[in-house]
Length: 251
Image (cartoon, rainbow, N blue to C red; front, side, top):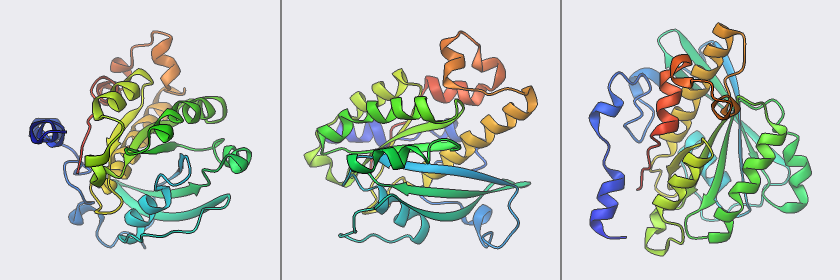
């Protein structure tokens, strides 16, 4: 990727982030909104699952978000591991994110699917230097569609953006695939922390919007609604806008 191409993807236009209560334009959770909230009472609980093939860095992403650390070697996740973190949505709402790091090996797939059923959001992780892990993303999407709630918010995450010199999947290709499947998309680096906080902030905010509209209209707002022709822009302009224009960010 040339320097010009890199700049094109990393540029964040300020108007896209005006009135953004989560500070999505930054690489870290805003200190002013999320300082000292771990012991405060949360108003919502969101179950988020991290799925994807083995060795794509799922555990590293979670460790970077929760503990802000990165280790070169991790033991293979067996079945699943859970960690929680509070995140302020707005001045009146704090969400507890219950994040499940799941096993990527095929032999654990049936166990992993059990965590899909009541999930509010999902990160499907692939490695940008591993073509096979990206090609498996479609299988994970189908698993979610068959086992997760219809209004589960899905984000495709390309990890290891620090290895862009060895990338096998261009950002344009991954972004196009995400749009075609009505998923959000980001590239991150668990190693240097780039965009990791943004991913969870963005996902939590989308889940909040979906759940708010679900309560308001008494129905699920799902990817299937768009395929049926329902005008999501009338229901939630922010959700519709993100499906139309998915941001891709590199380290």
